[in-house]
Length: 72
Image: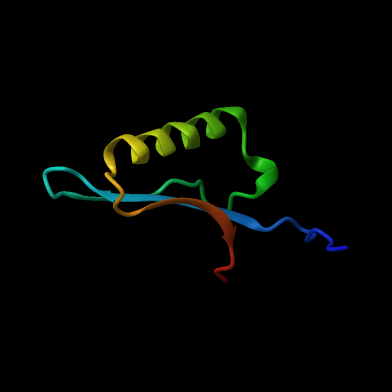
């Protein structure tokens, strides 16, 4: 069995893609020092909207991700 970290790990999320007109879009879309327990319903909706943006506009370029942040 694997245990969860205590305190909770920080969460990091990003979106990036190249628009049809060639413009590179990149944004870190997470609040500073965000942990999983701080992901509010409003922030979840924002993340879903960003995923939709990437799916609608990314054309298979770039990335969208939400992950554990290991930066110290």
